[in-house]
Length: 329
Image (cartoon, rainbow, N blue to C red):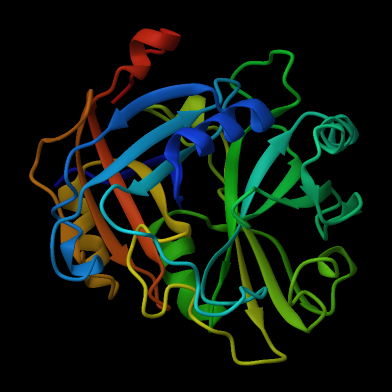
């Protein structure tokens, strides 16, 4: 059996009301101005997470060619997407924050402030010593703009793509089985408990938490790993309250961060490993599934708190033509 390979985070899904508007915002504010695909096929496989039936949708994969992961901008076409039942507070179960890399945090802060972006913090220092600040996009999603040293290319834009996310979890040790053991985030950059000044401006950030920032000790190789670059996963567990589940009583594709997606190879090996570790695939496509101009094999599992994690084994993608990047298996 061939071993599974994790090439990196491909994208984070973002449920929105207007995909065209959202693409423009991420392109002009964060440099994600390449549309890898623009797909209007009916969503069928995800019916169990969409009220039990297929739904018409539009999905745009937006990418920043300086490197990092993209945004899968996802819009229902025949249904009004629903917001969270409760205001999202730090530590709620699900994807709390998307982490976006910057070359120089002060340049990003000043540029985005001049553009009238909803910045909700000053520049702060994270427990790993790197500087960052927080903002929300027009849809209320929380973004962290943070100094990071992994780049595929450099142009005039100060920000690159996504390099990770912060996930609210109920038990960090249980979550580590998936994110550290299966997905290879085996390097503990920090493991801190208490109240954190750098989180104080975030809704719900004034409580006590355990925070574990994970990286991967070995470089990812093959596939689009050079483009995606290094990535991190931060697990955050609230110790001050009982968190809510962000997607409780809502559909996949509703407003907010809907999943985190990893680009992989050898789906068969991965499905067997996930099942053995207690994370069976809930959804699995045909071996070759068309997504507009792109083609691949994909599926979803749930982490211990029900957050959806997607895996895509890419077979064909027009990205190759746009950036002349060689795909390495």
